[in-house]
Length: 307
Image (cartoon, rainbow, N blue to C red; front, side):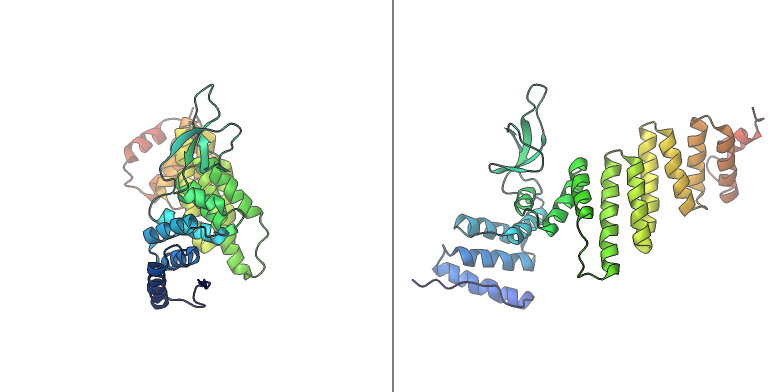
């Protein structure tokens, strides 16, 4: 029997995709083993946002022998992510010499999961997962961006950091206008800053969110302020008073009339045994917010004679 190639329509919208799905479904009812039709149907489902159907259609297309390229893998990975299957059913497997973030046999290697003496045991994700399909997409930039976002979403900080750093090392696309290139790089710096902050690398995180704000001040100046406060929180929990003070100092540069920030900075100076600096910040707090909830305690401290 003559097998005709099945191609996606040259330009598609919702109505065209729906018509294409009906045509392909009718074709597959007659020829259920048509791998090319299965793959075209998966792509149409993906364009329509019918993610559960797309996932199954890609699986059947591959099972019937369709050759999936990097962009198909990207779309399949996106569909899995959209239905909440970033990692699927995570298991453990002994994989000597494996590295996190690679495909080994039929699984995606996530992170070491063995105890002492079993360092070659890893947490792994199956083929039926976003991470597996995105890793199979290889060097496709869009897939690497989706993968970095997945690592960040799942708090795999080191993998996310490595992913965003690689993306920032790429040569900027010359086809994009300069403003668009700056916006994309600003977004990558912001995501990298989030990842570094999650990993406890506060100073590096602050440097990258500062760069993001330089590239796109309108979008990332408020984000920079929020992230500086988060950085101060993290440093404080770790007992890093110097890091807390640096983050709050920079936050106050962005929002000098925020009484809460001045109060917190005063507390950090007090814990760091710098009473004069604490007094300065608490005086500013009371100027900005005379009815501050800690007003009495601050006034008592300020009334004490200087040592």
